[in-house]
Length: 177
Image (cartoon, rainbow, N blue to C red; front, side):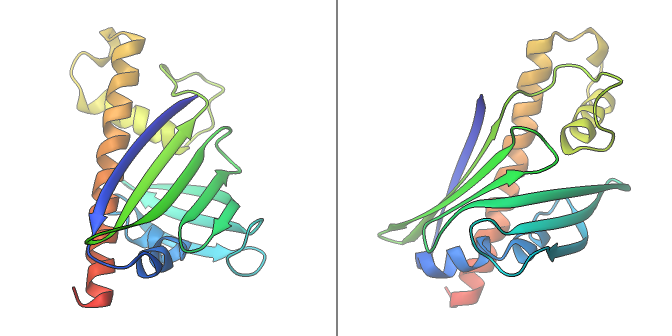
């Protein structure tokens, strides 16, 4: 299992930060790399066991994602499991700090693919990311599986960091910090 973890300090109390990260549709719209076409709870509001469906655009490609809330412990912990990408878990934790809160975003994967195979699900997040890397990096076809894995980890880390900055901005705006 691979785990990528990033955090940010936020000048807002934990309940205010958790209110944003546990509002999955609002949180999704704060991701600067996606345009959310639709987001809907499939079986009621936020609670353990609830399911959500997201449709997004990224670089003109439409992607559908379904998540299930595995753990809901306000105001400190939320764990989501993907129902489409086997082995993908997202854990969001909020801890009190002297200045407000620390928000940690961790993503765990069974594995990051090193090459696309014809059996890969089309338009999955990792497939889109892998395709993007092929076009963005010269000589991609000659890179090793480890280089691809490292590049994908760096891309995911960068996207999580951008997302955390957006959540920070929104949280601090909400509390007037």
